[in-house]
Length: 454
Image 1 (cartoon, rainbow, N blue to C red):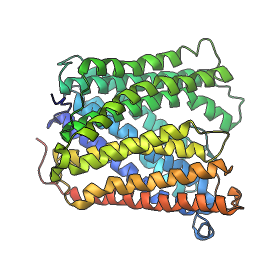
Image 2: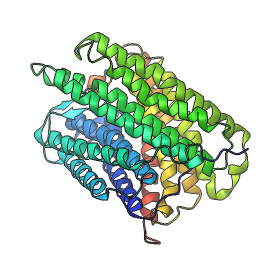
Image 3: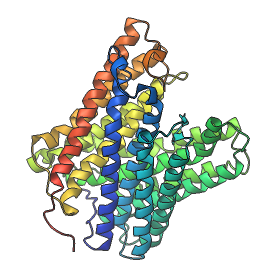
Image 4: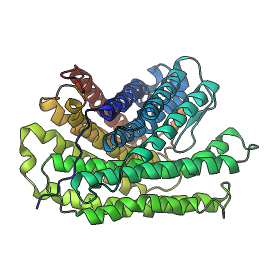
C-alpha cells in the first residue's frame, strides 16, 4: 500500500503568508549566493590572490552563513508552518514576517557599509557591529512572533493518522522545538558572563540554542522528505504511528538539553558536552530510521520515472546522499580543521536540497509558473554533486591538518596533497555555485505570475 504524506497548500490568507516567507527565503539565498563566489575563490590556490574583498573574507563568511543557513532554513520552516496553519490571528503572522524581513535586509547590508569585527563562533556567527546585531535582534524578534503564531494556529491533532495530519503534526513538533531553542537562548543570555571577551561570549550564548535549532532544521527536512517521496509516487512503508513517535522525540530530546541549565553553568565543559551528545544521539536515530525507509522506497520504486516529476527523484537522492555523507564525515573529525566544515556542509546542503526540490513543486501552488525542462531535473545533481566533491576535498585536506575559517596564505598549503585537496574543494565549490545559480535562475524565471491567490 502506498503511504501518502502531503499538504494541500492553502489559497487564503495563510497561503499568501506562506508566499511571503518563501520569497524571504529566496531573497536570502540570492544574497548569500552573491557572497559565495568570493568565498570559494578566496581559498583556491593560484586564484585567491586575485579575489576582491579577500581582506573581508570573514565578514563575508559570517553574513553568507547566516543568510544561507539561519535565515533560509527558518524562512522555509515558516512556509511549512503557514501551510499547516489556519487563517487565524493573521496580523501576528504578517507582523512576524515584516520584522524578519527587515532584520534580513540589515544583515545583508553589513558587508557593503563597512561592518566589521567578525566572530566565527559556532551555529550563529556574528559581526560584533551595531548594524549586524540590530538586524539579528530584529530577525529573532520576528522569528519569535512567527513561532508564537504557529503554535496558536496549527491544529496538530486534527486528522492525526492521515497523510496531511502527520506532516501537520511534524511541523508542529518543529515549532515546539523552535520555541525550546528560544528558551535555551534566553537561559544562556542570563547565565553568560558579561566579562567574557566577545568571541567566547557569543560561543556560550548560542551553544545551547544553536544545537536545538539544528533539531528544527532536521525535523523540517524530514517533513520535506516525506512530502517529496509521496509526490514522486515512491512507496515508503513507514506508518503514521511510528512517525508520531519519531517526530515527538525532537522536542523531548531538546528538553533533555534544557535540563542541563539548572545543574551545569553555560561556561562549563559539561554543558557543552551534554548538548553535543544530545545532538549526536538524540537527532541521529530518527533520521536514520526515516532515511532507511526512504532509501528503500527510492530503490524499489519505479513510478517516479514520469517525466513531470523526475526532479523530485533528483532532489530526494541528492538530499539523502549529502546528508548521509555529512553524517559519516562527522565521525572522522579529529582536531580543529576543515573536516568540520566538510561535515556540516554535507548535512546543511542535504537540508537545502530537500527544500529546493519542494520549492519547485510549491511554485505553481503559490501563484507562479511550473518549472519545466531537463535542467530542473539536473539542477539538484549539479548542486549536490559539486558539494559532494567539495566536502571530499575538505575531508582529505582536514586529514593533512589544513585549518578551518582561514583563507589565502594563512591556510599553509605547503604540499602537493594539501594543494590538490583544497583545489578539489574549490572545483566542487564552483560546480555547487553553478548549481545554486541554476536554482535561483529557474525560480526567478518561473516567478512570472500565472494566477492569483484568492
